[in-house]
Image 1 (cartoon, rainbow, N blue to C red):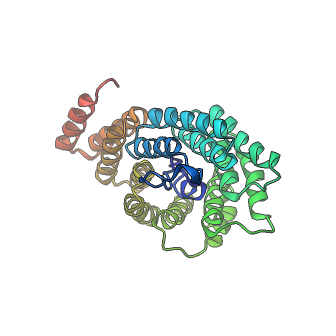
Image 2 (tube, one colour):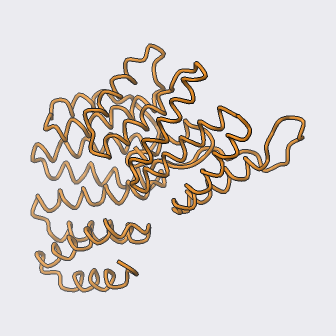
Length: 309
């Protein structure tokens, strides 16, 4: 989310979104501030608890805590805290695939800023664009990305790269491989592993479209390592599944089975049984094609161990 996430600062959340997307930003000081300073320790505690819940993959709990944070922010009539809470709640809902609710929250954040005659920042807009794309509205998402890139104030390098990543996904969906290539070329250099993973993933998708299976596997495998480094385990599992698909296209069924197995195993431990079931089923099929009976049995045993599928 574009792992979309949890935290107090808007900019921190954006970097994880695709994708899913988001992680939490800062959670405030743990020290009790002087009450005369206007610091609300209850608000800080709620944000901190929500951040911890999100980092532990407990999105429902994080969303509930962010709703409490929002109530506290409304009580304080604190516009900055209101916008932060709405943004973080939208990111949680994105992670839960509750796209309609996520869109409502991010647009409430935009309205809150506009009522205060404040500009809507690029990190809020890219979250909105990602939600639109994930909810099956790629053209609406594209229009929002146009708004981001045409901002005379210029978006941050992180927001800009995330925007090109999303536009690359939309270009691929349209079948516009030339457009996908342009979005890859538009990436600026970054040391951030998440942004580097985004570029590698798009490169892998382009290689897949061009039938360069080995190049696609290499690009996706690099994205796997980078997403792991970023602690983006949702994106990591998705990159493993993409690499497995490229292996299948190359006729490397054993390699495909191993990657699908790893993707499904990780997804299961994340509590994402939908993707886990899909990828483990693909893993078993690929292992069968490869004639790897031992791996097929291991996959089946793991699959049967997943509770409440």
